[in-house]
Length: 86
Image 1 (cartoon, one colour):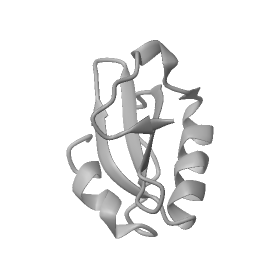
Image 2: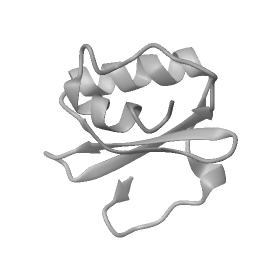
Image 3: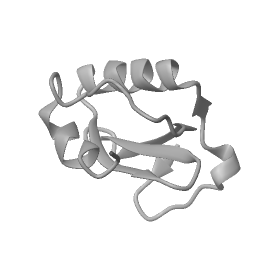
């Protein structure tokens, strides 16, 4: 369980294939979580999801792809993050 102000080693963040990363994010967003960070490194794409009710943060990571299917159509909150990853 990760809470605000705590840390996690990058190697401990759950790593998904891109399709599974997207499916996991969509599932969590439908359950009421929200995206609090979505950023890229040279090779990886990280997303931090927050569950406001429990105060838990959920980081996930995938290999960075050349392109991906937008989440913003279904989840407008994603739009502010997606524009920076093109």
